[in-house]
Image 1 (tube, rainbow, N blue to C red):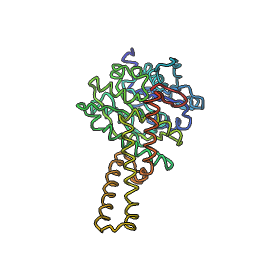
Image 2 (tube, rainbow, N blue to C red):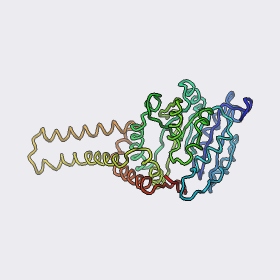
Image 3 (cartoon, helix red, strand yellow):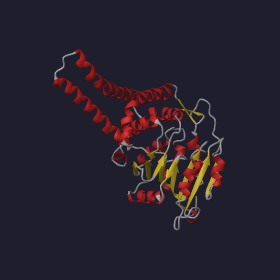
Image 4 (tube, one colour):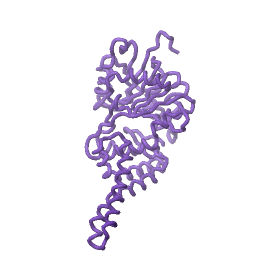
Length: 351
């Protein structure tokens, strides 16, 4: 146990496995928050955990002043059995060395707004939250990212409504591992990342444990605090969501079917409005009814996708990604529910 004199206000922990493309920007956004009264190395610390990187990740981390760099312990190989994931193994090792009263777990692909660390701790204290988590602003590039990501994040907002997550009376619990702030006592009381070590969605599982212990959660969209670009290529996006979707949603195949129905209605109704009058003697009101039905379907669809907090243009583009979303849900179901394994960053985990 740390003595009171050894304690700091905050420990920020960043797990990193082959993150040379984004790590430097992440660390810069964190270290520049050091200021009088909140000095890095005195009032708070920043730890990067290198999880077996084969690129320049370790060198980049060591080049940033004020950053403590450690190597994740070797993963224990247990053939045929679930073992700790690389991320959970890295974070649990770092947490045991952390000196902060508050522990912040954040990903290497995030960029944090100036002053956001102090504001987050004050927000957690204001709402008496043992765990505070933000869903970052998503940076997307290319057509398929812009079209697919609003779909997924709108469904997440519906499955895990922030108001219900933050309501102690609700059984719904969730957190986003890209920004997960938890007080030290609560973290170790529920077992930390060791207790969810074999879970692919460790953030949601940890939130469940905190809420089950009758501690308070606070979860919200945090575009004012940080932003992230989760994926830089289409194959990486496919691999990432294949890993997660069937675990995030209780009925992935049913969800895929409903979204295909949406796609069918959104595409077929305008076509029918053009084609049918050429072959059938439609009365004006019948043609108008088709148009009103299409407008209603489109409006309800856009109202749902806007829950993603993405711009309107991306929400409209998302119509084109409905078949892809359905395919990813099916692919994730096959991988998680039938094969019982997922692949992420060169490792295979039991699911």
